Amino acid sequence: MKLTTTRGFVLASAMTLGVSLPAAAQELAIAIHVDPAHAMFKVGERLKKTIEEQTDGEMTVTLLGTEVGGERDHLEGVSYGEYDIALGGSMPMTLYAPKFAAADLPFVYDSSDEARQVYEGDTGEAINKQLVANGNMRLVGLSARNPRNLTSNMPVESPEDIQGVRMRVPEIAPWVKVWEQVGALPSPIAWPEVYTSLQTGVIEMQENPVDLIYAGKLYEVQDYINRTEHVYSFFHWLMNEDFYQGLSDEDREMLLSAIDEATQWGDELVAQGQEEVYQKLKDEGMEVVEPDVAAFREAAKPAVEEIAQGYDPAVRDYVMSLINQ
Image (cartoon, rainbow, N blue to C red; front, side):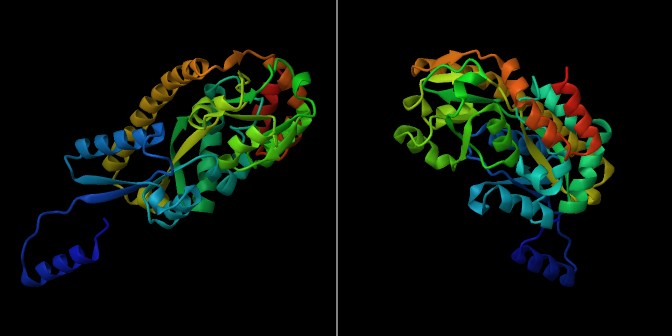
């Protein structure tokens, strides 16, 4: 239980005087590094509501956003116990369990369900051992993200259409390697600079989930959204390990159940929102292209095979089984 300095003083004074005080509510801090309008913040709001209702207010939840820092700040905070729960994107796996960070490898998975299997069974247990050992946190929930698609000013139907094309990708080494293998000239550019870079011709294409494509108004500088759906990734809900171990069995079961319910609700919200965003992009003049994804996967295969050798054997074998189907 966390007490402010003032509350601690009052409590100490009351104990000295022999005055009985009602039990204080246990305060949970959840750090979420996205904008309050984002679907993941809405998942956090639902989680807060469920926890407070199920405990009749004996647990209260404070949602913290970017006012206390970005994703890395939040991850460090949950590691040190400053926050009880934090939301992470791909960063927690890259930082604390890199040999298992395979769920967002491009051109491997056909669905979020396939990518989610990286986190299940014995592999899931091994991931949590790594997260606990390296970050003093454990994975308690996954939230699906919209898959990533390629945008352009010409229709992209096969790998031949991107040969030698300057393409923006995030600064994620495996992603750069895969796109180079396919034939593009990947250029890591910060997201705030992507619109201007497309507008001025510094890059010709970029890739992102449809919600970011719409939010970034890329329909003003790109004509086509090519439905490659090449990355299926997740948001990770992480709990401080000391907090987790200090919970009673009843409270732990309640919290994990609340997180499971909130993330399932969020997955439905994201899935429904994706089709709405596609329609908005069409309304803004973008044309949706259905590329030959199998050809892209075949072109990417040598790079994926090389990257997979650095993963934990169970993850490596799973990735190899998918690309060799």
